[in-house]
Amino acid sequence: VPVSVGVTLFEAVSLYKGKRTISSKGDVETEWKVHQLVFYCCCGMLAGIVGGLLGLGGGFILGPLFLELGIPPQ
Image 1: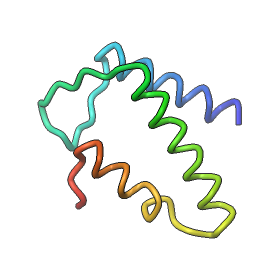
Image 2 (image 1 turned 180 degrees about the horizontal axis):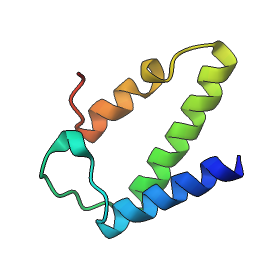
Image 3 (image 1 turned 90 degrees about the horizontal axis):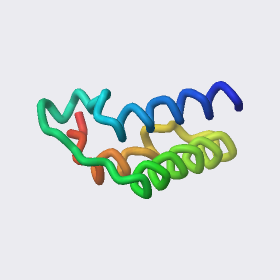
């Protein structure tokens, strides 16, 4: 748990500062707000818990979130 929280925080801070980008969106700059990053991180953790309890794949649960972010489905 501490490693996953650490990696999540590192990636969230990198996205917020603009050091990281979502590669599938191309060169499009996205202005991330703190509440968006917190919401997406919580959705990821909740999806992991639900997927683990129900035995579902992560893509099945996170697919709609990725579409909301504008990431192409393929």
